[in-house]
Image (cartoon, rainbow, N blue to C red; front, side):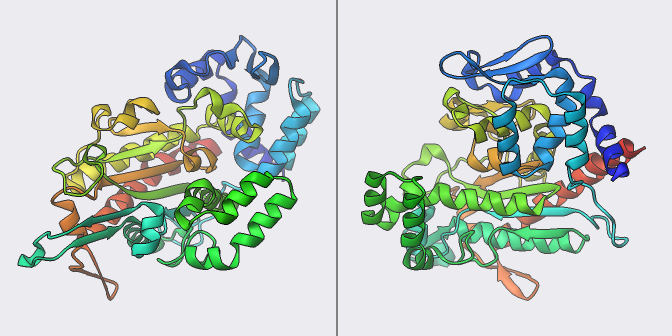
Length: 436
């Protein structure tokens, strides 16, 4: 246990030397979308204060607490952190309390090499975005592309793409390549048909919907009106009103219980300007999201304040930017897809904060906020691009005795190269220097 305490002190040495002005700069760079938090979060010489809607100080972090709280935020279970802040509020911790916190923290981000392989001892979580694997489920998710009369292979046929299927195939290839390097891999979906609950959406609706709604209603987490509305909702309405967020929270729980050193969230994009996506587009771009870009109403709940503080006080957002910049570079080099500029999509201007790396944007998505590790949330290309959709519908490549689109393999390989670069250039050198 003494060695664990020593490691935590070493890991936080650089953080403890930072002035509050450092965190204010970080706040402005990554977290404060269009200055919406200016009247909520305040930076003083010796403390950081979060106020409520009545302008009352609700939560205070003092400068001398930052090294302890930063490790606490990325190492402890969420329910423990919530209880801690409910009791702390604006009170300043004593030295004994800070020492006690460091002693109690488990060394979840350490690793022990088991063999000679490059990624031995490393835990990587991979999230195959969405779950629609056939027409009905992809339609519910609104992650379905259908182009009639595409003349593929000189036939008067149609092209159909399910993003949930593409992300799953990409994740399986990536997982296999990383396992060959010694990494321990977690997939949030282990079957192309499954949601993060381990069963299909159809099966969840048939077997679990009523039990979940009854449980939430009995715990007073659902109002009667919302309960009745959800019971009567069509599958697509139910997905939009409830299941989308509920299932994403399940993904974040699975990932956080795994304590990964890195999380890779895989998506495929569409050209926003091509809406309603009835025909192909000539536009194509890639982007990566990391945490940040909070709006004023994003700090209404304690859990969101906790994730905000974790991104502010730890190095997770900086490391996320690094792995994402490597990923964008590999999307460009391996896939020949350029990084998205802010003019390419309206949401990049309205709900995102651009970083210093082209194509990497802070965006306060549920997973970029809730996942407790450095992460890359990748959007490798536009599926509806006139060349890409043809490549993505052709199962023309053999990998491990099964057929996949070669383009899917190329996307997985781009993520793989980025991951290896991150651990070789960022993670291992930093970990070694911190232990000395």
